[in-house]
Length: 137
View 1 (cartoon, rainbow, N blue to C red):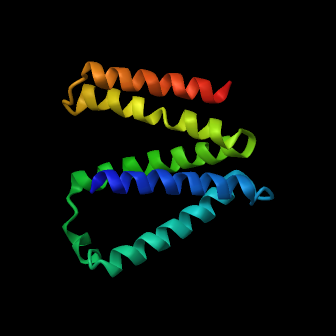
View 2: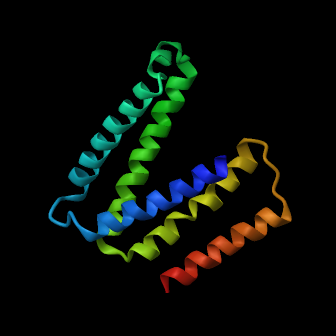
């Protein structure tokens, strides 16, 4: 099922890029990103409440809070720079470079999460880099 969810994520990432590139050119990037983040937060709270998962918030461990804060800051920075790049760059090129995150997470997973680096994974990462380069020339 995770592959289906990942495919939906990729699709909606493309929709977000399309909609962002198509409109909202009059706003400054940080304001535009902030408005989008507020809408995302409200939508996610609604989904969490609808699924009945909000009651578990009191069980969040201290270490989890630290990791949530760090990942939230990283997500905010990622989103900010993503939309800043979309303002001036070609959508296909921005998304191609953004997908280099696959290569970065592979390196982080091997170094810090104990995942193995196989020849197939290395070849896949290399193809992603080559694909990104081809998309921006």
